[in-house]
Image 1: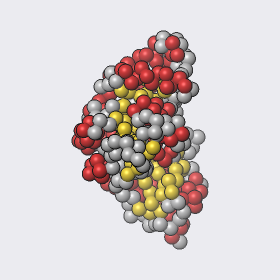
Image 2: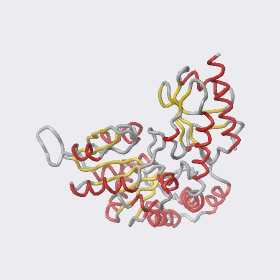
Image 3: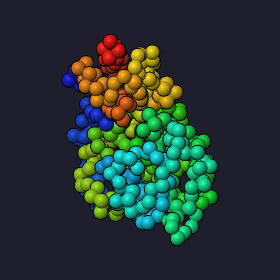
Image 4: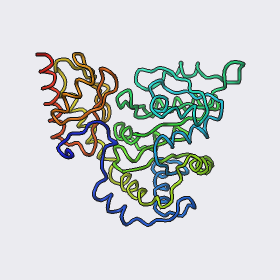
Length: 349
């Protein structure tokens, strides 16, 4: 289902609202959400809390804002938060940990987004020291963007939560694509959220809504989040217009994420054996395919790929990410496989 003849694999953020989303947006009952009386926003927040098994939820304009609010409330100024070294919060959120939440990020390595438990526990500062602030929180990411959409299991997350509880630490999940994890694991999203204190998830990625994310947690924390959202500039008035699309996305777009995963797997298999590229099939767990280049730089590869009207995203000088989503169909996958094969054949010759 290419748009204007282009197969756009750059991200699931490029998805366009469905015709039904546009219809419900145009007819949504609205109020003033700053006063808490937008009925559509309230309905979305109630639905998000119910689906994730949390007491309450707050609608925010972006995932970055949702994560920032969680850091402000869950860590504290001058305190330390542990996170994986390639996580989105540390690498792609404009320094929000230190610039806005005024906390110290402590980054730890992992193979696939799951920080080894022994390393995690040994890295916790349990009390204020002369040189080190105490650890107050742990951040996880599920699915993990820079590791290629890999999934953290509920069992691992439970172990992290038990560890955190022993040390009285807050656990936050950057769950921008947590519904992809839920579908890949075959478990309700509430089973994943059960092992964290707060969780952010996006509506505007694979779920196809145009705008918005939710932060979920206990009622006391979410009540505090209302004030934080306000001073960050995220309070909106007749936000029900966009919240309506979010409701529909949660009701109708979750199960179809399996189609995105199937297409990503098919794309990865189709690239196997091509000269000059490598794909780790085991890492293709959701809707990302990470392509390692041996003969071309990312810039050279993408320029040649665009000649075939196929777009993708550079992740490093030799790594390209392909992301499947609602606006990518089987024909787009076939076009991408053929285009990559043609580009690599030209580079070999």
